[in-house]
Length: 441
Image (tube, rainbow, N blue to C red; front, side, top):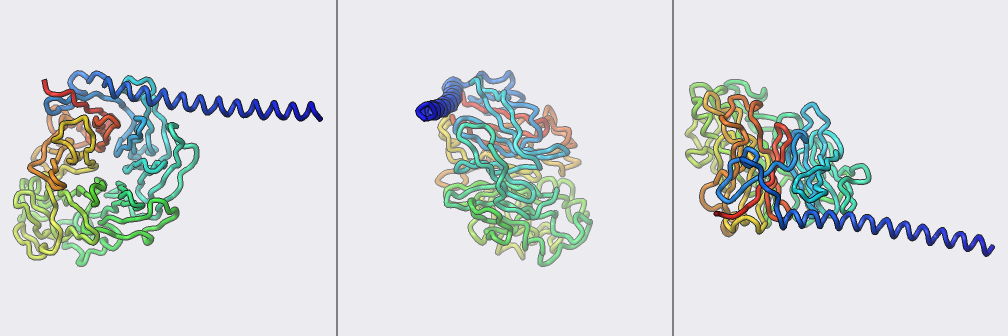
């Protein structure tokens, strides 16, 4: 009896010791990881020759920290420096690529895949990794300082409308328990047969009942459907670039295409290449931004009626009641992601302004394609201030491609590192750059 008791006691002690040692190993690994990141942040790595192909403002430089990870979209960065990158499927399995710099050299040598299917929106929130697919928002419970989750995902929202045209979804959180998801409209201008010459649009546009807007859900309630959410904004075509900031949702939208080929005689190729701006919106609950009835004209800086609804490039009759953008960018640049900069590494000029990743155009021929950049929009006192600035360019290569598939790179994501440097992802080859401010010489 005594021997049995002694054996059990020793076994409990040994088990406790193993558990203690296990916790110590986990703590040591976590401490080493944080130390490695802190060392990297305190002593940023050397930038690549030629900034890895990017052109940047004076005082900035860049290095490629990951490559070949797949068609990279949005990113989320953990406090310990780990990065989670959404991947489009594009004939592959998609999912999220988890990246870790374990040795502190500033580059991500550990790469592990999570999940599958095409993913654009990615976020880390209250111990969960959230990801947005065509038809759902899912989340994984994360273990502190572990790179990948231990179990399968939970389904936050399912059954969302989503097809290959404008099915990509971004996500944002307001910090008060709500999750915001864009649901793009699978259409150019709500024609009954999409992209047909001289075909009027549906009036009213029935797509707007369940698409073409932003929906709000509970971030913690599982098993939600679209009808469990609330539509907070409508009149939007496609807009995975969404972010919550200072009490409001900000949205960069991809505007309509093919004014000239669908409505020959009303619009020239040059007008198509220059007129429909890519707008930046601040969304209040109930906002209607006017798609498909109107488009924001980049040159005129006002809403004009779409030709599918009787517009001729001049009329604005029907557009007076719609909410205009707070800023606008050149036609067909194709915004995919945006973020407000809150770090301390970059100069004060960048504080609280927006970085926008522009994927680049396909619909400017015979003029050269354009976009393929990361642009910065300054903000002062919570409002856009002055003109936008192209912050990072060179993605497309030496000359703008006539076919966007021939571009060297296409910017798709922007995210802030713990030290205030900037990560940029691209979808052609799966590169990620880290942009560092060294100061003016």
